[in-house]
Every structure is written in C-alpha cells, then in structure tokens.
Image (cartoon, rainbow, N blue to C red; front, side, top):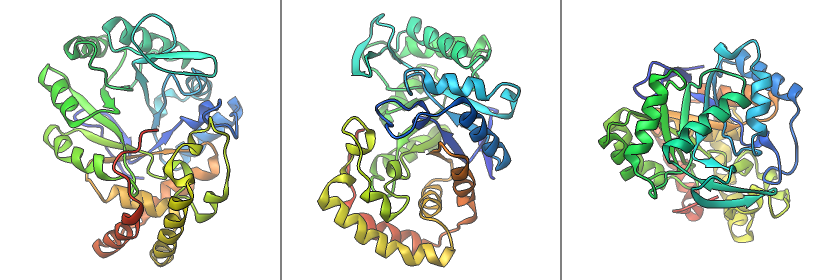
Length: 332
C-alpha cells in the first residue's frame, strides 16, 4: 500500500480508501444488508492489506453505515483514518429539501448549528470522541460560507475533527472556502474514465491549494468491474438502475470498450477494477481512490491496483476506447 498526506493535514492516508455507501444498504443498495460481523470482517481485511482510510456519511442507510462502522471499530479505532460527512440530515430542523427516501426526508443544511449537530450525531453513532476528517456532503450556497468555515475550524480547535473537505462542489467553491479562512484538505468528487471532465477541471485548483482530490465512482457502481455486470438488473430505487450504462445504447458502447480494454488488462495480468483504479491514480499526483467495498474478498483485489503501472500509450488507448460513451455530467 502507498500512503500520502491528506491535503495539508498531518494525516497519512492509504491511496485506496474504503467507501461504505453500500454498507448502509436500504433501497439504494437493494441486494444486501450488511451485518455487524460482516463489517468487522471487512475492516479486518482492510487492515491486512494496508487500507487505513474509511469514508462514510450519516445518510448512508440513514445512520446504518455509521452504526455498523462504530461496532466494527471497537478496539481498533486508532488503526484507521475515519472520515464522515456533514450537511445532509433528516432531523427536520431546517435547511433545503434534498430528497425523500425510505420514509425519511433529508435536508441540506450548512449552518453552524447543523454542522455541529451532524458531527455530534456521527460521534455518537460511531462511538468515538473524534473524527479524522469531515466532508461537507453537498456544498450549499443558501447559507454564508464564512459561517460554515467558522464552525468547522471551531470543531478542529476543540479536537472533535482533525481535517475537513468538500464534496459535490465546483472549483469556485474551493476558492471561496479558502478565501474566507478555510483549510480544505480534500475534495471528494465523481471521476471515472467514463466521466473524467469535472475532475480534470478541478485538478489545477487542487494543486494551487495542496488539496487532495478524492475520486468516487471510479468503477461506475460496478459497471466497470466486468462486462458480465451489465447483465444484472436492479429495482428502480437502486442507484445502479439510474445511471446511463443500463441503457441499451450505452451498453453496446461499453461492451465494445471492454473489448478494446481487454488486451491491456491481459498484458498486466490484472482485474478490470485494478485497471481502472490504476488509470485514475495516474491522472493526478495527489489522488485518493475511494472504492465501495462490502466483502473482504474485494479488498485484496482493490488494494493491488497499486501494482499496475500503465504506460502513457496504454492510458491514452484506454481513454480513446471510452470516448464514444463518455458523459459530461453524471449526477446520481
């Protein structure tokens, strides 16, 4: 495993991070609800293969992902860098409507009172007295950024969080947070070979501030794990039923791309997940690859993406194969 500093903080994080959106289950991930034992086994596998960076959020399973992680972290909290999020909550205490799901109404609220309450709720659910990193889940311009930054900086001074960042944001958001005294150590944004444009626009601003770019969606919710994945079907509430790759015209293009990617995969004797994670890591030096994993068997496979070193010609060929089906905006 390789490790790097998270932005300008003193946190040393693995290049591959564990994403736990799927761990929360519910209607968004309709094929499996994880148990406490499975969560403990998952973290044990991460520790075995050097993955120390865990990302979650309050709304993943409406608290369930955080609750499971809290159980799984008992006795080994200091082995991991724990990152959760703030701004999305279902307390009905204000903010802007974001969505309704599984009987809950979730609002986006970046007021100081909401940020502090979010952190306190996450500390309770995960049974810890500090969070290594907190990400503003959705940047919100309805409330003063300076107030949000003040709340995050105060939480740092209190020792409740050690770093913070932004997600689902734009380059101008990072500029604004920095301009009002913020210290944004990470931005967590969608980025994959099928939708690389937002990330590439963001890289220069991250370089300017020494901010880590953490990609999510690099495996397109499973559609880049193998050609066979395209044959699966999902209920309409499932996130995987709502992205372009389920549509016939995109499926045909993706099958053709897999045919072009196959010789490169074979040349490196690697899996397709390893291939696309290696591609992502090659795009920006201060890159963190966030990969959703629910099974210990997936951990070794994803951790070994660091063994795959692609040549410039291979990187160019991979993207050329993807060009016919790349999309500019992919909002899940």
